[in-house]
Each structure stands twice: as C-alpha cells, then as structure tokens.
Amino acid sequence: MGFSEKIKLEVKRKSMFRCCRCQAVGVDVHHILPQKDRGLDEIDNAAPLCQNCHDQLGDNPNKRKEITQMRDNWYQVVGKMYSPKLNKIYPLIEKVGMGIEEMERDRSRTQKDLSEIKDTLKEISDKAIDNMTFGTASLVAANMVSASGASLSNARTEDIIEIELCPSCRNALIPKNSICPLCRNHN
Image (cartoon, rainbow, N blue to C red):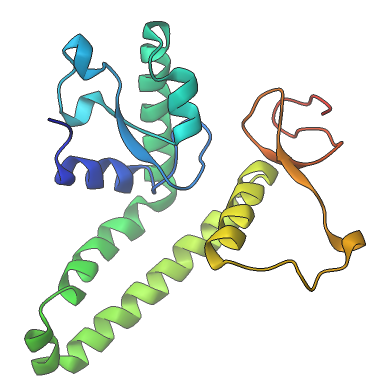
C-alpha cells in the first residue's frame, strides 16, 4: 500500500525535505524495514532518503539500524535548528492556504500571515546558510542551477568549474581534482 500522504509530509517536514544521510535536497520517504519483509507503513518505519542513499543502503538488512540512527540524529539536528520557527510557520501556512473566497473576505489578515511566513522563512534560510558545509552548499547550488534552468552559454570557459560527486564517499559535490571536505580523499 505505501505510506499515507500525511506520514510522507510529516517525515519530510521533520527532515526539512533533506536526506537523513547526506542532507541532499529532494527526498522520498522509504521503508527502513521493507514491505516485502513485513515493514509497516508507519512513521517509525519511515526514513527520508535521497535516491542515491536509498540505492546504496535501502535493501541492505545490515544497514537498517544505521538508517534509523541517521534518521533520528537528523531529526534531532533539524529540531534544534528549526523547530521553534517551524512550529510557528506551519499554522500560518495552513491559514494562508484557505479558500479563495475566505482570502478575499479577509485580505488584510492573509497579507499579514503571508508577511509573517516570509519573515520566518528568511530567518530559517539565513540560519541554514550560516550552518552550511562545503558539500551541502555545492548540492544546493547545483540543485538551484538545474531547477532554474540556468544556462552556461554566456559563461567563459575559464570561469566554469567542473564539479563532480566525490568518487570516494559519494556524499559531496566537489570541484574536479580537489580534496573532498568530508572524506579528505583526493579525486
């Protein structure tokens, strides 16, 4: 059957929509104990993993405890960094998500709520940027460029830095021929 949309959203929110292993943006909610092994569609059996981490760990019975530990640790990190702000913002998002008629009737309150959401998101993003590692910054930048459809056609060849996934740890995007800040291996 699979996880309900409510459980998927809760897992994604608790992880700030990031993989619990590599913190890559864009996660799916995966079963720690697979359904084929009678894994339940419950929050305690769910882990936010990107496709790469799921491919590496997902079907390995020896890694289930590690996935659970990584998930729990990541939830704790996210909770410390963002929880007070997120607890404030989710009810505001639900308010702004009301029907069109209600928004028209109460436009001033909706604008105030929207402004509060924007301010809170700015605080969260500023804090996230301040705490970013090189690997996370690389992933975010790469995702933003690909999501924006940005073109490099006007860039000079000497300005382009080739970036690749670290061949040793596969946990960070790094410039070619450099040392990975996570595993310290030279690629």
